[in-house]
Image 1 (cartoon, rainbow, N blue to C red):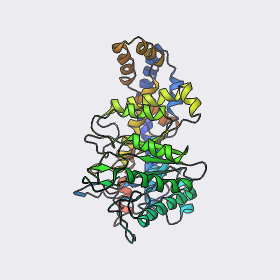
Image 2 (tube, rainbow, N blue to C red):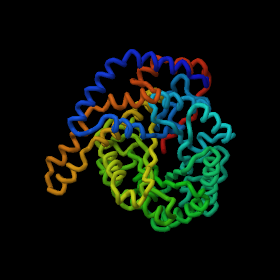
Image 3 (cartoon, rainbow, N blue to C red):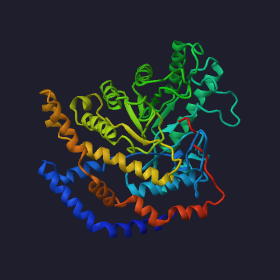
Image 4 (spheres, rainbow, N blue to C red):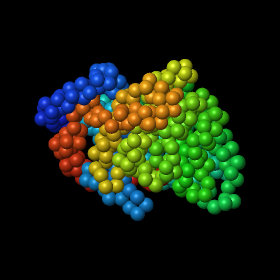
Length: 437
């Protein structure tokens, strides 16, 4: 079903139905912003620049450690996932790229997949390696680690897998490799705490040597799970150490769910910006250091504060001098156990966009004055003034101007896309993303 014209018809019908109310809301918001010295058209232009990648593994119904509950019309393979990704992008207008997880979504013919993606209006983001699960037919096990394993043969297998991911990504037009390791120990004494990190760095140096000149390598940290005593890459400091050891193409990736409860993630972001090693994000939300909830569903203020740091850095001459092309990679990474995966990704894309646009509204000159004067109340009020602004009309207008939906969920449901693919894909069923990523 590469022909998605019926979706465009649903978008047009819904937009026509909502147009009058939307235009009134947009005009009212424009007047409000003008009183604060902000130009609506300038904000709209900035808001239209945001791009967020979607994960290939995010289009099947996710699961928990106790099982999964398949939804009708699940993708039968990568081609179906690309079609679903095209639906999300046509509705939200902010998700033009797909991030592949290898080997879950390893393309048999990368060039043909790249061609299909292009026809659907999509490109490819970072490729993600997988050395945290044993795959069918795999010669050696990762039970006791991969890049940190004591056995050089296991490390070699993991290195070769990452190099294969780079080659696949190169054929797809990707420009980055993301590495998350489950390596660690569940009991004291199980592994040598220093030597295990040394082995990871030595292994990644071989992977790094295989990067094309215009690529980046992202290492992702996670404090625990499945190694409950000591995870090798357990925090941003260790990720930074790895990046420093590898070279200028190595950066740190921040997964919002991969932190201990109540961690000040925006400060982690600020620190990585300061050392010029912030590479990108995996967006989701978290209650207990998990990473499977829709972005912005629990902690929208935290998401806003993270984007505040990002926008502030993008406007800082010192940051621009250190990194003239400061452009962190943004991707959604979440599971969908009870929601339609497409609706969940739409919701997250909208909430990420919302947090970014709110961050654009911060009066940074006033904030700097209040910070210098140690005026705690006024500094906080300055942030809250931006956060409390309902920017929904801006998001909707960005989507409308790009051919998307004023209300993406409404248009999606009006299109009956899920019912259509349920009939077309009957008897299919996608690969479960697992529960470790």
